[in-house]
Image (cartoon, rainbow over all chains, first blue to last red; front, top):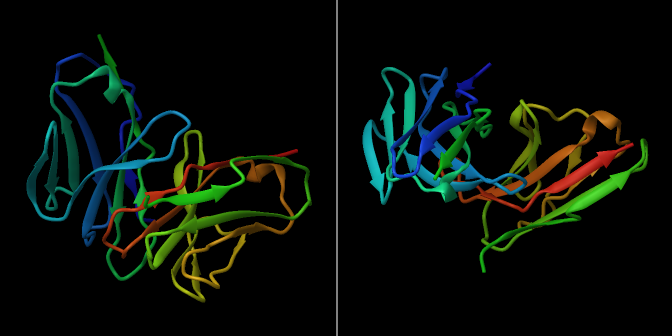
Length: 112
Length: 112
């Protein structure tokens, strides 16, 4: 069973701080990694994707991938109350299967 | 506007009464999927389709059917719904296996 693990939280950070969200995965051959944000009662929406080892930055968001450690993270700089949501890590498997695995999500609360 | 639509958004039904949830995308995506989301269990894939007339089981296919007669449509069919199928359902589409998924707004189903 291919697994994606996330701390369910909630992770509580003050406004303006850096929020760090982490995800580990079991399928060593995984090729692509995604972070989705989901507000309560809404559908997931893509925040970042990353395919290669290292960092990828987009505005206040940075995704970090370490394939050797099977670890992907999302950093949110200058956190805002509007960032309060559940963040889902998704991993697309190796081997041609199209069954992406989602973590259960980390709830982030940014308090003023 | 590029989007995935689902209907109905909310449905309350009774055990054993066949129902269909429709899903349509206007982005000419080849890949489409159905997920259910339950508290504490995250997003789990029910079925997916890689193209017209090509469908395959996801992680939790029992009790569900799908069809893909046209590229844009991917309906989810519950032949004989049971209370354990009460859930929030999302349809999603993507350009390919390594690409982000675009999610529909969700269908909240209650089976009494």
